[in-house]
Length: 153
Image 1 (cartoon, rainbow, N blue to C red):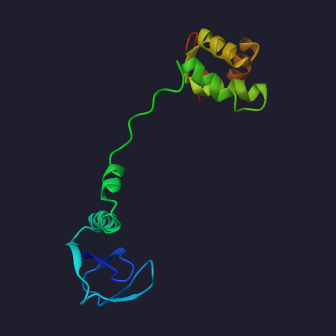
Image 2: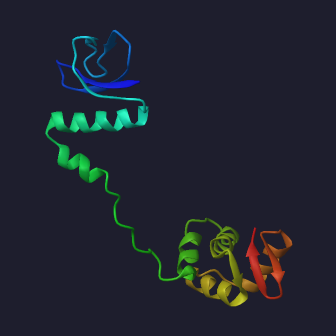
Image 3: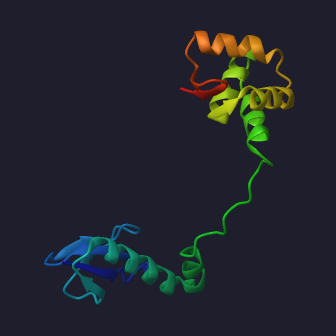
């Protein structure tokens, strides 16, 4: 069993195990006699007790509305890139050498054709996709699961 109590000095709530006689406030270190402190919540679940402690802290600080708004997940972010070729080109900009940029493009594309690779190379300004594709096949950065279709490993 868990209980949620508040420190009478600093008004900070804390979760304590039921049956304890004393506890110390986490904020002001004041020793609390749990028999003389009011419990705001009693329950079996520690996670539920932590949520209630957050609500009690918000109420005691007068910020319950902000606490409730923090529980609502933010709206999903819009896509940063128009398509997967632009995303692959953006991933390649972080690499230092042309070889690393080519490998980053292949990994960002996942499964691709030679046309996909050429388009992403053009957007990232990486030259000679045929030479890089031959090198990536030889060094097992990509493999060819079916004719003219490639997949990054």
